[in-house]
Length: 118
Image (cartoon, rainbow, N blue to C red; front, side, top):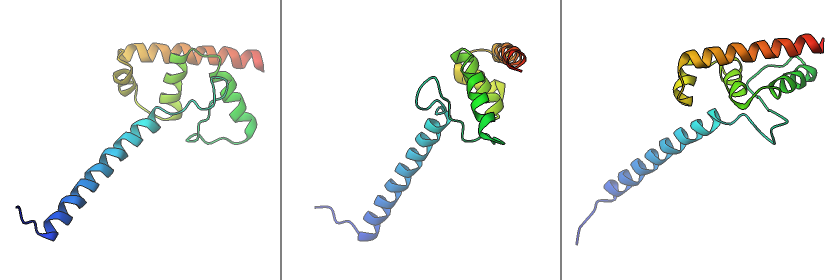
């Protein structure tokens, strides 16, 4: 029979718990990075973005809902979350130029919507 010291067992369990905490923390970060569409496709909740008032928040949601899912994701990632185009490109498995062009087209569509609205 193997004789274990209580300190060794305690250290082993503590190390296992620490590693599990690190793994779950990394998983939680990945989930939060991808989590910005809440409730349904009609309403987008963006907690990281500062709004002056509720009308601005509603307007941003309305404009974002006019975009395709890819354009919406790129706008949210670049403008709202402040991520770099190259990082978004790697995440979406497309080129940085494609992200840039898609972002440009999305902003143009948003600009046209703004002109019609006001």
